Image 1 (tube, each protein chain N blue to C red):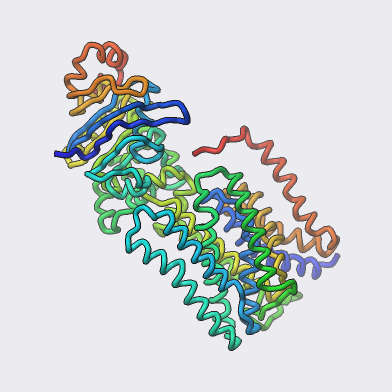
Image 2 (image 1 turned 180 degrees about the vertical axis):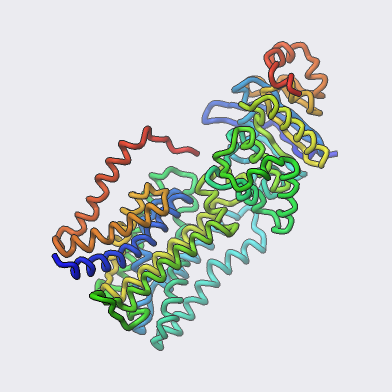
Length: 243
Length: 346
């Protein structure tokens, strides 16, 4: 069967510097796939290029369709969602407006139901729905960014470092929600520095180093790999213990 | 100075200030959404005013033809961009909005111009014509540059301003024109005499500001526009097209410009190049508002109008100088208050 997202031989460059080299990747339906790797390995660059924010050389297909000529907005409309590292919220607008805009491309009556679903996933957002996004705590902002992306009813949600800078208890919450998403039929491509936590919930995993994938396979196998354990898992006590 | 003169000047200043407020708000809106500093705003004012005045005098305004020409240009741009993946629906939609619509308006204009139409028809036609010009200008001059720097956009903006001003001379000649009052009649309250026209200015300004406030606060498209202004990438990730926001912003700005022109032209004679100075005063207000704050811009516009009224009474030769000098202390204060210059993102 064909994968939901398939990236073949992708190169992404900033000017002459190639930040991502010859990367291929697949995400199937109802899968959590994670890309782990150190800071600066090119993970964020890769996600941005898949979303269409950066130009990509190579082939990216989503739901069987080549994305080459499509803008960010078209990719969103096709069901590809990205929660970027910096969240990019509408900070001077309230939580409800942020969510409502996430459903900009969705029919009005469907959007209502979407909002209820998001509020069930993130009850905190419902409590704060009249509060300005900029005044939320870091964890709440991450929830709002995920909620906004979910309002667009994505088939595949790409999460860029969702645990960055958050308290362990909130990280655990977010990882729990990611698994709930898979159960409700949303595939997830998860980029994480918190490798241990990410590998625990993922089905497939890729290890990225200096712009290339150096290892890939089932998440459980990767987690058991000695080299990965030595490079990435040793430092991740805090987040991992909370799960 | 006696109180009566002071009240007169205040009244005059507030009337002008109300118009500068509308123009300033439009400038802030366009800049926030598209990063374009809209120098041609003044041309929207003159085009609106002179189209209205020409129609009321039974003359055919050239702007209606310009709208069609620009529309055809915009259609060609749409076709060119989509050349690799042309599909029927897109072509038909672009053809209707860019060619059929201005053609119909042109036909209506020719029909009505021959028979000195009533004021309401003149206003409606002028607004639609200038609105279309604004929309197509965005498509032709700014949309292809949307990803470039503020400086490039500013240069394009100056170019558009010069082109439109030249075309204005071609369409309307070097002679000034005046239009009929929207609302004639007057009444006095104490020492002050309120003309129907000044009441119209107040009413339309207030109605427009309230309307904009409701639009931005309550409607999905208004919120989408704000979202683009707050975070362009975030808006795109939510599926809001930057071009759609840009179109709405330009549409609003051109309608606001044209409406301001129609409100001024019964009071003052306008020439093909008068709009620039009027637009600049809106710009002064927008700068005082830091190109971000709507309420500050509106208040600053009233101050600009009042300062202008008083300086034209006391030192009429220097009235422009005095108005533009308002900028200097504001810029000084702002540069001192701003901790660091933030580099342009995205």
